[in-house]
Every structure is written in structure tokens, then in C-alpha cells.
Image 1 (cartoon, rainbow, N blue to C red):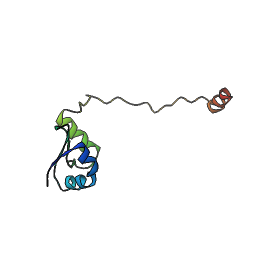
Image 2 (spheres, helix red, strand yellow):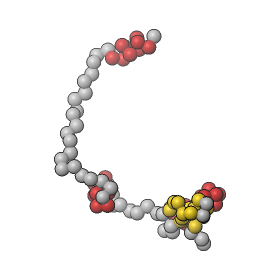
Image 3 (cartoon, rainbow, N blue to C red):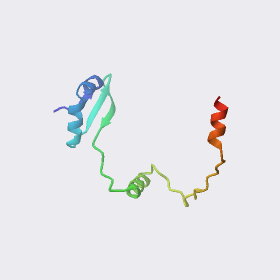
Length: 90
């Protein structure tokens, strides 16, 4: 089976192309004869956010900060905000 399809063919055969990719094949999509998109299987990245962030940092996509900023857990709430909001709408 061929692994290069025009954009028109890709739209018409998307289900079959997804099946091919799930089997491990890579498909190239062309536009006016020029390759523009590659559809390939997603690589397994282990489980969890830490494993994914480590993988992205290794690839240079993510730059880790020396220290993560601390997020404030305090939220300022003004009593009656909903009442004021609804009153201003009228």
C-alpha cells in the first residue's frame, strides 16, 4: 500500500489512513505535489506528567526553571459581588 496521499485523497480515505498509522506506518500528505504533513503514530512517553515533562526537556522543547514560583492560595473575595454584578446589569 502507498504511503503518500494528496490532501484530497487523505480527506477521502482518512479512516483507512488512521488504521495504517495505528499499525505503525507513517503517511505523507502532499499539497500540489509537495509534501506538507506527516502523519505518524504517537510515541509512548511512559506514564504521568513528570515523564512527559522530562521527555520534552530532553528534546529542548521545555526549559525548566531553577525554582518553580509559589502560587498564592489566598483569593480575595468581596462580599456581595454577585449582587453588585446583577444590579449593574439592570
